[in-house]
Amino acid sequence: MWNNQIEALKERRRQHFAGGGPQKIQRQHENGKLAVRERLDILLDENSFVEINGCMETDAGAASFGKNIAYPGDGVITGWGTIDGRKVCVAAEDFTVIGGTLGSTHAKKIARLQDLAYEMRVPVIFLNDSGGARIEEGINALSGYGEIFRNHVKASGVIPQICAILGPCSGGACYSPALCDFIFCVKDISKMFITGPSVVESVLGSRPTLEELGGAGMHSSTSGVIHALYNDEATCLRGIRTLLSYLPSNCGELSRPVSLPRSDLYRKPRTALEELVPDNIRKAYDMHQVIGHVTDDVPFFEIQKHFAPNAIVGFSYLSGTVTGIVANQPLHAGGALDCDASDKIARFIRFCDCFHISLLTLVDVPAFLPGKDQEQKGIIRHGAKILYAYSEASVPKVTLILRKAYGGAYIAMNSKTLGADLVYAWPIAEIAVMGADGAVNILYRKQLAQSQNRQEEFRQLKQQYEESFLNPDIAEKKGFVDEVILPEETRSRLVNAFEFLNAKKRPGYAETISKKHGNIPL
Image 1: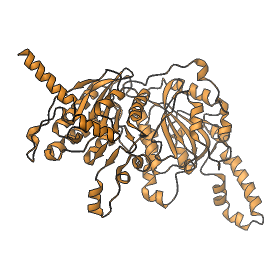
Image 2 (image 1 turned 45 degrees about the vertical axis):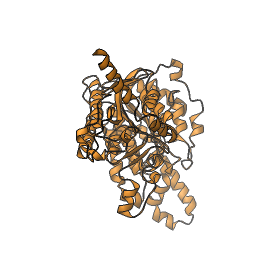
Image 3 (image 1 turned 90 degrees about the horizontal axis):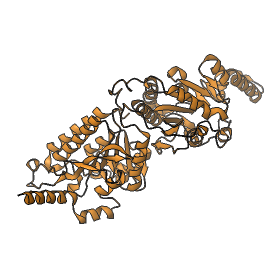
Image 4 (image 1 turned 30 degrees about the vertical axis):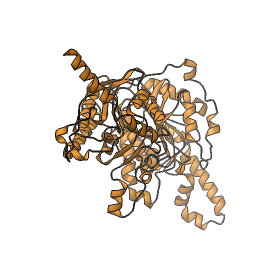
């Protein structure tokens, strides 16, 4: 009796572990994709994965069209493991089993894993590779998405939720990744769309390519749906491991600190910052270089690198502590804020606030981007998201104004009146309603039109405006800037500021595990 039962159990496990079999796994490889267990081996620490509900079978009673086949595992592997020794939960769809489609059992397994991750307060990772809802199970399959979506919202702001799209993801299945905090994709492999090319053609009469409709490149640069893009699956999965190294396991913890020699904390920049940042506001420079010089010698993990490149957001370390970086990028649109940049910044701020990650804002912003296109897209509505996010955030917030800080964009980029704990400025900073050229042309339009030497008079008026309004000393005297600092003092001031502010009272942390708010996908 024992032998028969043991052998039966071993056979069920063998069937489940084999997935769709060698031929289908080989087809995955031919398509440039890894098998599901190969993905888990790369993502997790060696021999750390513990599977649950492995032998749950397809709900044959829900099938139609004469199909009553029971598949062990039902096309998804769920369980937990560790990444750098920290526990995580993982749900990985197996495209070799029924195309990874979601049926009722498949959905129950994922929902149960979400509950487990929430109860244990550990990050949850989804590896999506699925043909979508299983047609032959009808409403039983579709209803499964509802429970998964609800669980995403329940866990939002409590535990990090990360998804990797490693194959097709279409229809309602797209909204599970969309409700996560971060979505990772792979070039030429990841595809996300609500309706496929054939449906679009039947409705609209034109047939877009898969890449145009839902390719990883399009979602990386145009739609902003995904947050990180990689060339291959292995690099993508290792990228998830790296991201998690910056994040706490839940909203009741802080990110792991990194020990640094005291001499490194107060080191001067390797290159003089005034050499990186031109004093001519019309000359562009790469803000990434400034970030690299003022933060610790730990790689900057950028989020949504290819989307709205006029804004930069990502994680780094300052004084050995994880810090969220928000910055304008003068190389693109002069660093102006548009609709996409506003959404990108606001959502990142809210994520950092959910998980008690301090915020450093580097400002060189000329304006909210003007023009009919932006107004019609709702720049007022989108820009207000930044104002709301910064005002609501209770984590330590420090701002450095490098050059330009004009108008409403100055206010939006974590100004003192919006709630910044400390604001620093360089001597070349210009803080005003607008730049000198525009202001003089508006204020002295009639006078200049009647001038016999317009060019010289314009120069004099511009100089007067700069001395009266653009000098950062004025903002310092009024208390809108805490200190005007030399570029060489930047790192030491920021280090000191965050070391002091890290003791700041943060609602939700240590007092209770209750979340502050969710991380709505703005």
